[in-house]
Length: 365
Image (tube, rainbow, N blue to C red; front, side, top):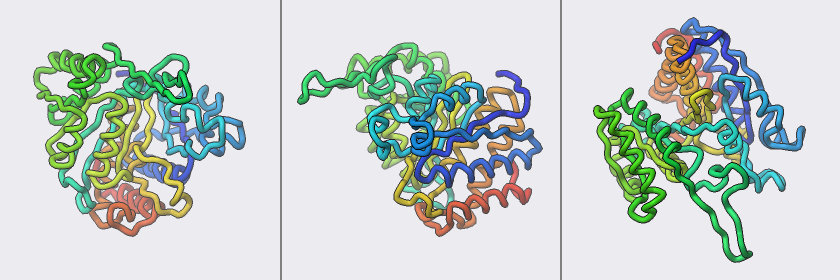
């Protein structure tokens, strides 16, 4: 833990699609929560990223943006629509992957929590996916140079997965430390029955780390069986730790189980910095229509506040994070929600309702 001179400096990267709608809503709500708890304000630094950055700077992630991010405490990253970028940008590592790799943001933490009055598939779901973010079977992130994916002939494509003890140990510690602050349960997800060396190493190293946390109950599940368990009894799981690709798939599943990908938040973190990034994509089909659910981005921002508060022993930031969470939950409980979770609110209207709930003083962080 370190102390921090105020104010915190956070980047704002609105991104593509619905990003320019949901990210500003999140910034306003964070500011309202900080004001409500009497915390020092945040210096927000807007930075170019995405299609607009291609048009202006010739790159979806300009060098100037990366240099500035290195000077900040953290940042909010809106979704990007890299599939719609012109070539050669479409074929390269996307902006999110580039940032995660550049700053070694090895821990992708994705909660899935059902809200009262929202349409969860499994009511009572309250779990966290802890995803190793740098190796595994995502070939575009697990090599120092190149993508780890190649074609020796036009008819043969090969990708390699990488698992190292060091990477597994550090993500396992994140998972077990988190479990100690929650319900003391960790489930290791793997495919060691088939991938005996790679996925087997992940399972076994997590088991070895578990020995340092005797108060935490541990089990493990094969990835295919885990999808069924989550659909049937997601409310029984606490912290789930897994490799990169499995974590990406499971966190989309658990977001829908909890009610909608629109409520699925996340942060990507190293020991030094963190990036708030909702689990969903850019949703270009509804961009600019004030229809997007901003909850995932709002709660991702709250996770960033909590991470900063923990890192810098700043209780005011942690209280502001809890206030944002309470404001979102209270707003949904009152029946104000976007269409994906059964309501009729607009993006901006939902944001205004949460801001007013926080400013009213009727809820506490």
